[in-house]
Image 1 (tube, rainbow, N blue to C red):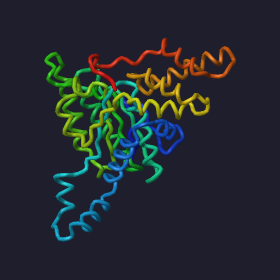
Image 2 (cartoon, rainbow, N blue to C red):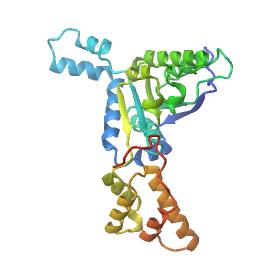
Image 3 (cartoon, rainbow, N blue to C red):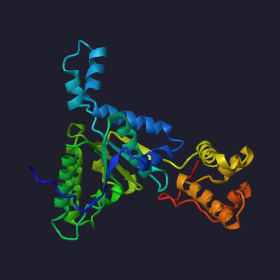
Image 4 (tube, rainbow, N blue to C red):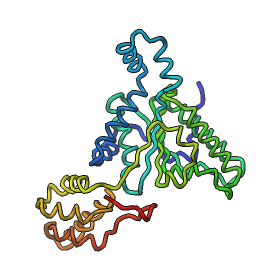
Length: 298
């Protein structure tokens, strides 16, 4: 009997899905149903080789070796990357997706990794190897979603002349391991970053089939979120619209902070929540700073 591989120190957590905590995160994502459907269906296609083969046989019955061509040249790699400001839902999306997939196919492991760097020269690349070895071992038990948060920290741009050669080697190894792992290994990869264009290595682009920009919510999305979150408090439509207008530039997380700030005040004073409480909270809860300070919000 083979000895189980120990969890590398850079593995932040191993979570088995489905579970209620991950389900709540998936259900809390409002206004991005298009992205939820896109990524969920993409991963389900990656996981089901027979689905691609059946589609080829149905619509292109006389084409020779089309499934093999799709696999070798246009294969679904099972890798996506999310970028956007903090608080726009990237982490909740990745974590909640594990539950959504598990409810369809059965048990899934969500594995989150941290900084794959070492203060000891020569160990960073080894840690990358150990991490992916562990991930592939867990994938023998069930499908794995490997989630690499703060991807700009583990795959920084190697054009930085001040970067130590050992760090460059570790980035090389990480990108190599990401490219080599496939749905055939029963591993799917999600990376997330706040600094995609500014800090992530250019070579990372071609490793990911889907790149999604998590923008701050538009007016319609803000109104939808406020309507859902404040339904039980019976805030009238006129004030919901006013609040949606005044929260321009706020992330989803910022808007929840506004509501929590107002609720805290009502709990302390032991009274019902009003629209004025919410509007007053805007004085104290500012929008999360953007990594691109000059951009305009919807």
